[in-house]
Amino acid sequence: MSMSVDLAAPTGWEHSKREATRQALLEGGLQLVIKTGIPAMTVGTISEAAGFTRGAFYYNFVDKSDFVSTLIGWYYQHLRVHTVEVWEELQTVLEGIDMDAPAPKRAETALTPFLDAITGNHRAIIAQEMRLYASRDQHCYGILQSAEFEWQHEIEEYFQRIMDAVNIKCTGSLKDLALLARTAYTVFDVYPEGYTDHYGETVGETPTTLSTIFELMITDK
Image (cartoon, rainbow, N blue to C red; front, side, top):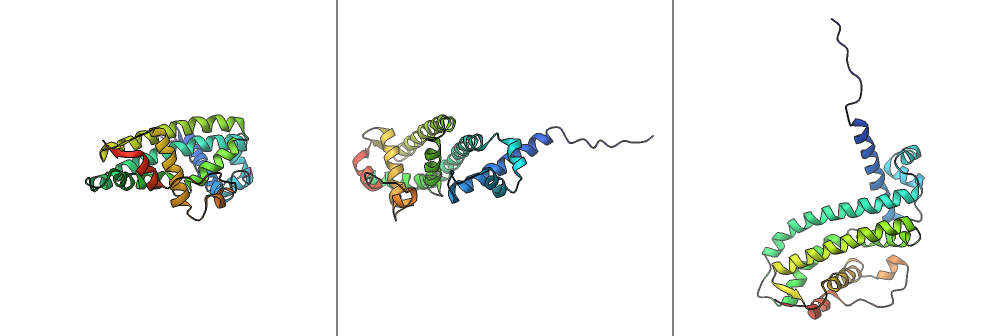
């Protein structure tokens, strides 16, 4: 009896292959956001950065706007997953904090590693590029607003967890604390040579330093 061999692709193979292509295109596009900025990106440069043809791009995305809107959602989703990992790694830092130190010092020791993880590694540039592009693209604007709202809410929750762990509290708005701390860290720690140099725009007011923010807004429970 003859035996036939089924050469058909396994169930789901085509789907997984397409997802792998989309993933590679998104990863390549994210690197371009950092290197060239979104306005300079084209279908050709995105495809080339990922090692694919323009045909592969158009098989997965309608156009550049569709790609960027997908990139925004994908990036913030990965950022949330990354933050879970950061929280787990932060436990060692929290366990080693001197609980006899002043409340602002405990805040700085506990929150600085967290701020570094969510703000460093070009994240501030990526966020700014996405905001600038979304301001000119209505579809992307709605997606970015939703993603940033959810992300800000999660940051506030992590801030609260960290403050609870070192027995401190915020004397004002937790939302304000999170926003001010992120901005101050970006300006003075990520880009100490100058915020304006990276964004090409005038900064009307220099943010207060991180340590000063904690002095003003953090106290013992």
